[in-house]
Image 1: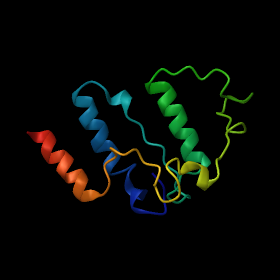
Image 2 (image 1 turned 90 degrees about the horizontal axis):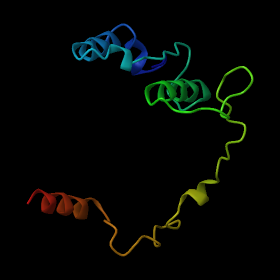
Image 3 (image 1 turned 180 degrees about the vertical axis):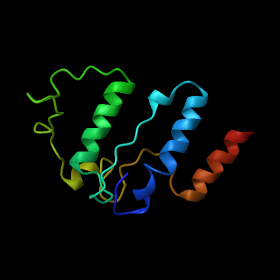
Image 4 (image 1 turned 90 degrees about the vertical axis):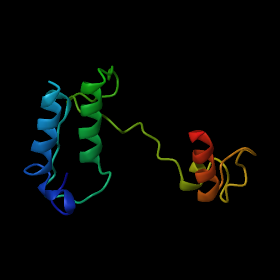
Length: 116
């Protein structure tokens, strides 16, 4: 959560409630909140580092080689691909497989068929 949008009250309002629900199952240690009171909503470094630490803990991940000398996750070797490279099916999606679901109406038909 952060201090510059609708998540600003999470630490005092929503998070205690969520933690109490987890406590019903004896799992209150499985939920955490990282609050960034002076920040806005984004996928900035502070949020990513909090996410990495949470996932490392909860999923018992091996993070050897991913942290710097200070014990912080190190993104210096991360390659941020150009936007065009992320369009794996082409700029217009023309490289989609022939059996790909295309459009919301087709998706609804797939879901309806799956119910039967």
